[in-house]
Image (cartoon, rainbow, N blue to C red; front, side, top):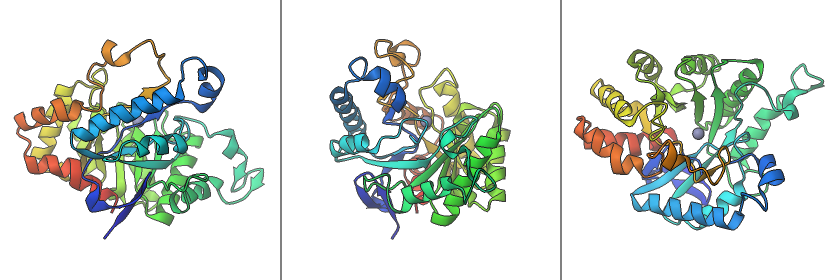
Length: 324
Ligand SMILES: [Zn+2]
């Protein structure tokens, strides 16, 4: 029996149920919040209560687990997530370690590492491994997967060091990886190539945001390595409309790739990229909500010929295998 760590503690993977593989609870900059949010646009109690309500509504749709890749760079704050998790008894929240950077290393790692001013083993690897094996800060909550980014600029020196540290933490712990990629720059291939050279088990890698493209050649090249396609921005129609995302998944299922696809929205209860008073969801992305997949996408997939078994594979068995 395989066990995965969630915010409330270890859970047998067979208990994960329907799993959305890339959802945030909060996306914040902690410095932005501390300096400009408190007393203004951030109300801690109201935000926690709002998150609990939204996630309970998601659980009512039948989802049992969300996988939250909010790491340093996106405002990871585990005590706040623990408060939310305590209010959503029917939903597991799995949290991550790693780093979200499109280009540069945080200065805190810049001078420490092999051959640097402070010549030592890369402290990032230790930090990631500790989050997975001992827990994050003093919360007792263990991360269950690793997150990094390969964006448009590709493997900048900072991004390369982060990705290698993630690969080495994977090698030490066996924790799976989710990598944010840019499909227009085809950076999923760059990420998988680096991971392969580092000896990463590519069946334990989700190529995040793969669903932003309908380029079947690119998607099949990724999936043919054994990696999992993150069809994970349902509702962000400005990147790729739902209709196209559905058609692409239906074709991939027809071609035998249902065992390498996971579904999600990349939504959040609140993100500080936008001000409170500007409601992005009703203004430019009306479908970018946690329930879009269950309300709209699954019926569309069925109508496009995707079978119940394939839907179960994408929502339940692929996440279970990833965390096993
Ligand atoms: Zn995300």
